[in-house]
Length: 140
Image (tube, rainbow, N blue to C red; front, side, top):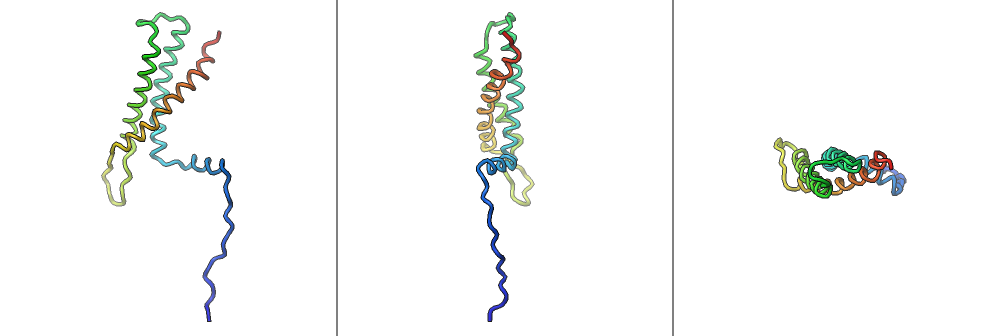
């Protein structure tokens, strides 16, 4: 004689749509990725605004020492965002530690996460500032 069944009845699993899945992934992003993106974004915004001020000043006819150095400053901007964003990410994203380990460890993987976040963010901020914000500031 068999006893009462302990098996629970199965519920139907609701299938989520594509955008619902992506929205859930966006809301629950891993902390190291969020830190890498925010550190690179903050550096890119500060340097991008400085470059935008320089660019608008040249477009309005300002005579600056050294002439038109936009290409050099663009190169310097991308390099600084990549280097500083990578370094800040390396500082604030330690490797996960197991239970009971109090020491945090930083390796090249933290730095690579920062580099992989910094390069596209540098270009996205440049596009945002140059193609959307600059036309609002410089009226023909």
